[in-house]
Image (cartoon, rainbow, N blue to C red; front, side, top):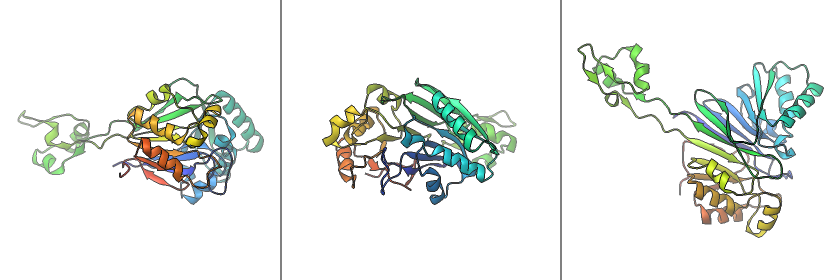
Length: 309
């Protein structure tokens, strides 16, 4: 299967603690790195997890609260000091792009890489696409403009069956057509169905990131059928009113959203600093959605796999 890994660099909420760093994740798609949010300490965590700066080309920012962006200037400055070339594209709201541009021009004007901005809005829209994936932003419900991100793998190519290809004398130039599902016609004019020459492709997987947000129907609609869901779970049941007042979710509400959306796996994070142990949050979530695990720094998840129940 193609590589589709999630790396947790930080899973705490606004107040930094000795246990958790602010929000930051890196998605490794075929050895290309996509960062989602960039709280303080992101660059240190990248080094600890041996994630290569040279592979980081896209950074997606969900909103402009400090615990999701304060790591950006330092990270980008380090890329410059390391002699990083090429381009780095930051997907961010317009006011965030202006803030970051002015900050980098003040502290790091002479940089060897091209810093680009893809200005995003709060409507549901595709904001990035390449040969392998599609990234869609969708609105969340928070105190400031905020979006989630859904990353869907595109349909993959079929697998060649070498013995069958040799038996029917398929030439090398026709192999790519077989991978795309085409049949093969022999020199005698006999059509060989594709399924006799190839095996089905690996399943395409999907991942959605929801932080920070209150629960809501439009969030559920945007993440429908996702294989892996990261959903903020800042508080437990005992703080449900506080979660509502601050436009956050409880662990139980995150699990209900996963169930309603038909997600297959749930990862919860963005934990309040009040918790020295998140076991109670996990227990509350699993009452609603058993396939749930806790985020933690330096956790790496193969998104091709499911949680073992």
